[in-house]
Amino acid sequence: MAEENKVSFRKDFAILTLSDKGSRGERMDTSGAWLRETLQMGGYKLADYTILPDQEELIVEKLIELVDTKNIALIITTGGTGLSPTDQTPEAMDRVFEKDIPGIAEAMRAASMLKTNRAMLSRGRAGIRGESLIINLPGSLKAVKENLEVFLNVLPHALEKIQGEEGDCGMPA
Image (cartoon, rainbow, N blue to C red):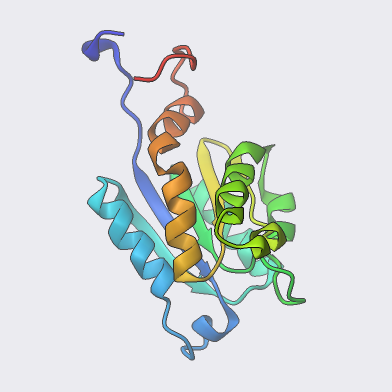
């Protein structure tokens, strides 16, 4: 495809950290801060950064605002994907996603399994609402770094497709 025919895509992003302690100021949000810095260094533009308690209703409300009102292209959540009774992020996704993208979560878990068998306990998901890509990451900084590495290079293509680019998916750009 000729360069002049290439579709540009929106690169705005939001970070939503889900942490009861973080929302009360009892814990530093190292994962969200690292994601902000890393994505900005990659040319993405920060549109929103919020820390909320891991409560399903609050998560749903915020994600719907970020997508339906602010039309943010990429939303990454960190936290709330484990087995604790307070971990409610995946349940909130049931009310937010219009389409699941299971391959992203499967790839993250597969890569993480090479480092720890506890990765199989992660319930993080990825999906689409409107023209927004939403990806759930664990809360630990180590896990966030490892998981972002898995999908960072496919983000441009995913965002292009979600935003309406019509080219074939079979050939890398």
